[in-house]
Image (tube, rainbow, N blue to C red):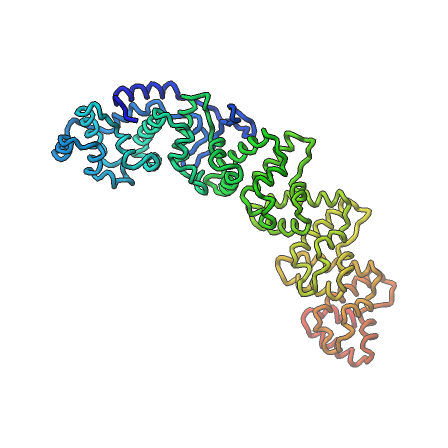
Length: 539
């Protein structure tokens, strides 16, 4: 729309801006709605993201705005010969912009001294062409476009030397859109924010749009809108939830994204869908093993919490939604273990695993049942039970079960020996002890294995056979990696049964009948590092 009188418009705009300036206080309760309209819109407050501040939605344009723009550039009545000739020939301000090479000055347009010359040209052009009057903003927009000029302005706002000029120029740009009757959604699309997607919240033009939204809401209170309602209208529930989910993991946009996630959740809540319906709407029901990789999973979890807060009798849980969509215990455990190893999904995984464990505990599911449920009983020796991530989850459950039901207390080793031989378990523990990530578990289970053998009524002789040490010859017995395990049990057994006339040497004598062979074996072993105590005790 062409402005009929630059002076008149500047005066009107400045007056309007003074009337529309508003001061707002930040709401520290993001879950509470502060302002609504017929479309359930919210007035939101956000942290900085490319200078997108908590008060951006509320402050509007500063009163100095447009009126000060004219005085920003020290234009004079003087035009150089080239520009005067251009004016005399009836060339437009856009022609002057090109002659001054300002069409190529995108990076430093507002600090370019030739911009003052263009301002002078616009003034003279308007004086000579009262029916074709234009403005500096209209001229720049005609060449750079609304989006392009907005980007130039936002960039200049970040530079101390051009910040004031940029703010004033932006005020005129926004007022121009308002004068043309553009809605907030029109400007959202004009700035191509509806195509920003991945970079939406870090897009500097989001601040430009928010400033315009404030002007629009002030001018048309019955048509007022908000950032979240505009985002939802342009991106839809699922896509917006994905955008916000990703943005929560970026330092620059995390605060803004979290606030918008919260607002979106409470807009959903007004329609009262169940957490299961939100789960499906966000297409999480088709994710399966990639569930926790989906950025929108956080929105579903936030909604579940909010839903329970509003409808406490519902008692909805994360786990109930997963079970509703046929996620099995085995699937969930594998997914949760993987998710716990990723920082951004660790908290989610721990929360759901806690729900799953609590459900099993309340149902009094025995550790043996969970062991089979996780198919740990199907592993072979080469797969090494102790190094399986599911084993760690099962071990924790066993500890929780023993704490909750002390009358049913049993060592994890009791279950393990029900599915694997003593030799296999001892070998698993030995291998796990070599791995830093499982060394602690191996040390614990090594002790429990000895205790369980004793509890099961095993003797040094029977364990010697179970570990197949009886199949070794005298000259290689002390080379067996399982011998230390047997010796540990033998000493434990003797300690618990001091009256028993059974010792390490007794077992060895029964195994190797020849005293000379036995003596030589012990003498050779005595020389080996690590067996000094064993040999001394045996002799």
